[in-house]
Image (cartoon, rainbow, N blue to C red; front, side, top):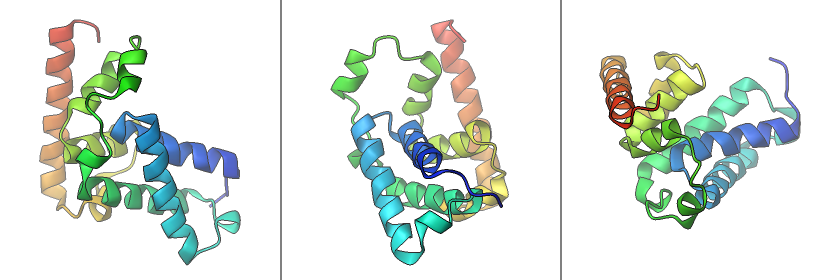
Length: 148
């Protein structure tokens, strides 16, 4: 696979972590932790492919799902300062960790459920149910808010 620039690679890792946490600080910590762990095992400068990004994304999920509360600050000042944050991001942040990971990997990043399995250690049929449930929750909450 083609390698991407280091800047794009780091931005993708951060964006992925931010979608899970909703906090800039937590996203930085989460992405940095995963990247540092993966870089110790390989050379980042020569391996910034989509496959390597998937490895980083899996590690971000593993770190996040092991302790989601430490990376998601519900009362974060950042949320208060960003009154114009879009509704979809708020709804995604309200989902349970597994639902959030699944919807982000599948619907935001376009990965298949088979590609998500190693990141969350759940069987395919469970991920189908989780994805369907997350989508229903997003639709229901957006209809209540009347904005999407």
